[in-house]
Image 1: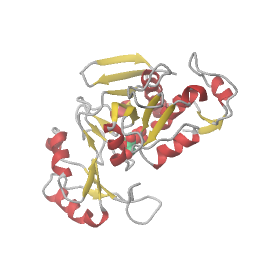
Image 2: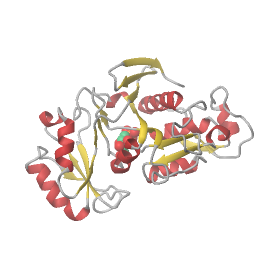
Image 3: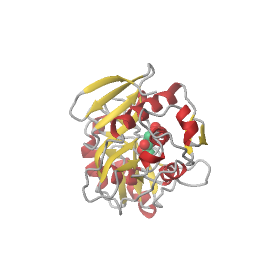
Image 4: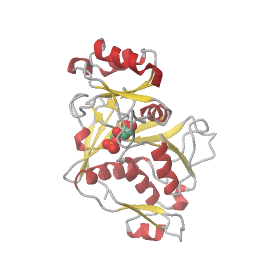
Length: 293
Ligand SMILES: O=C(CO)[C@H](O)[C@H](O)COP(=O)(O)O
């Protein structure tokens, strides 16, 4: 994905929605060049979800709040398209909104787009959080944490009245553990990792669990919270009941958070190769719509 930056004037050429402000706005707006392939599917999902959940007429449901809408912004490679679509709406529409990040990456995206940052201690109730996922099952249970952000992602998703997932079609599975080989990310405090890893391998049904290692650094990945991550590909049978895996694993002392999000998402938007978006909702409905361009 290529990301550049320009003023909102150029953003309008990139296609602002009807009714969005086109006043001379000096705030830099990230311009994401029209992508192809899988990136195009991510963009379709992200743009369509933003168009459905973050509009000027959407007002916060928290009466005491002084802001128009409180939005949680997730992490990963799909989320930049979420921020891009929001930024396209222009400075005027966005000035009344507050954006709560799920980690360093989304914080940078929010700042780069000229949007207003907030934190969950200041905004413990969020209107809508939009985030990516590594895999989504037919009941909208998720594996998350491919980017090692799942602790904050879960907090920001739980704080939200509405939690929406955006992903490309590869993440749309019948059962978790089908299309995401690394398995379930488990954030652990560093000194306990050996004990947790051994328990997960020997007694919890993930014999191939590993400590996640960094790529451009010697040693393990360190999360935004200073912890390590174990990737645990649980046996198929276990993954048929992700809520039980979550409960059991979370009870291991030293585990900070498990990248299984059960019964949390209200809807999942999957961008497809043919330009459509499949929307699966928690109430069991499935809809196919033309993706927002
Ligand atoms: O959970 C996450 C980070 O911790 C991401 O949302 C997940 O890895 C999906 O990322 P992408 O949009 O790059 O596929």
